[in-house]
Each structure stands twice: as C-alpha cells, then as structure tokens.
Amino acid sequence: MSKDKGAVRHDPFEVEQREWKKRQVNERLKRMLTFASPLFLLLLWEFLSRSGLIDIRFFPPPSSILGTFYGLLTSGELAGHIGVSLYRILVGFLLGVIPGIVIGLLMGLYSPIRHFVSPIVMALMPIPTLALLPIIIILFGIGDLSKVVTIAGSVFFPVVINTVAGVINIDSIYLDVAKNYGAGRVNFFMKIALPGALPVMLEGIQMGQAIALLTIVAAEMMGATSGIGFLIWTSYKAFLLQEMYVGLILISFFGYMFSLLLRAIQKKMLPWR
Image (spheres, rainbow, N blue to C red):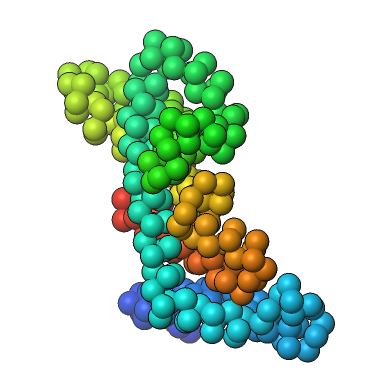
C-alpha cells in the first residue's frame, strides 16, 4: 500500500498564490502602520492641548497650527520660504554629493590618492560646517551662495567616506577579472567601482540628505532673510509659536519625503537588496 495514498496533494500554483497574498497583506499592514504612527502622535497632541494637560502657549493644538499653515499658504509668504529653502537644499546637496562620489571613488581605487587626501578629509570632517559659517558668510555673503556652500560642505564628508568604504569592500575577485580582461580605466570606473560601491554610497547619500536639512535650518537662522529656517527663527523671537511649528513640521515633512524618494531610487538601482 502506497504511503502517499492518504496524503493531501497541494497545487504548487495555489501555494504560491497564497504566499503572494500573504505578502501583500503584510505590505498593506506595514503601510498602514507607517501612516498610523504620526497620526496617533498628532491626535494625542491635540487631545493633550485641548484638555489642558500641556501648556497651550507652548504646545498649541495641531488644528490651530493647520489653520496658521493655511493662512501663510494662501498669503503666498510660505510658498516663498519653501521655494528658497528647497532651491538651496537641492543645489547644495548636488554640489556636495557629486564631488564626494568622484573623490571617494578615486580614493578607493588608487592608494596614492587615498593616502594623500585622507589626512585632509579626516582633519576637516570633525569641524562642524556651521562653525565655519562666519567665514563662509565673509567669503560668499549672506545670499544663497553661502547657504549652498554650507550645505555642500556638510553633505560632502559622509558621501566621500561611505564611497571609499564601498570601493574598498568590493570583492577582489571582481577587480582581478576586470584586470585579466583588460578593462580600460573608464569601464573599470563605471562598471566595477561605481556599481560595487553603490550600496554603501547610497547610505552615505541618505545620511547626507538628513544633514542637508539640519544645516539649512541652522544656516537660515544665523544669516538669512528668507527660508524655512528664517521663518522658524523670526517666529520664535516674536513668540508666534504656531508659525514656528509650521516651519518645524515642514522640515520634518520634507525630510520624510526625501528619505522615501532616496529609498525608492535605491530600490530601483539595487533590486537585489
């Protein structure tokens, strides 16, 4: 008598379909939790403010902040601050990321360049870019250029350090194969070093975007006449805390959106991860 006579046979296609549906349910649950946590925090804040459990002078309810946001938006004032800050962030971010990638790849590939540049990078990296802001303002003025240079300097170091680490950690077998097949410098650079360093490099870029947001707020507080940081600082000095919270929430929102965008790019460029 066959052992499998009473066994229940499962169609592989049905099993695969059930697994796919299970994964879809898990993904939907994760997305719901992602939106639920900030919503829960806002509802808790609203309740504590309305019930008087926290001081409404310092923590106005989110509903009143939303009303202030709408007023600033319809007046056109907020759009101007957002546009200026996003321009500074984007330009400064690119001016920090692109040289960081190029120099990081060169340092990782060529030992003489690494030994020559590393002391300079290691010496300058611990110095906060904001500490150099007075010198930057003296050199570049209080306009957009000084903010762009400040952001670029802040973004450059995490990108270059992570890019170097990514290149150094490439498996030597790929380097040997490229050399054995006579790969030229351009092909070696574009098809071995860059893809091999990409996972670690993108983590550095992700870190750089967070630093860019921190830097732009501080830079606009210290020497600017526009931008989200300027809005936060002037609102604080005038004790217009609802407008201050509008600026803080905007920075938080843009940080979250930029992080999602970079994660989506990372998923497209590194599908195996």
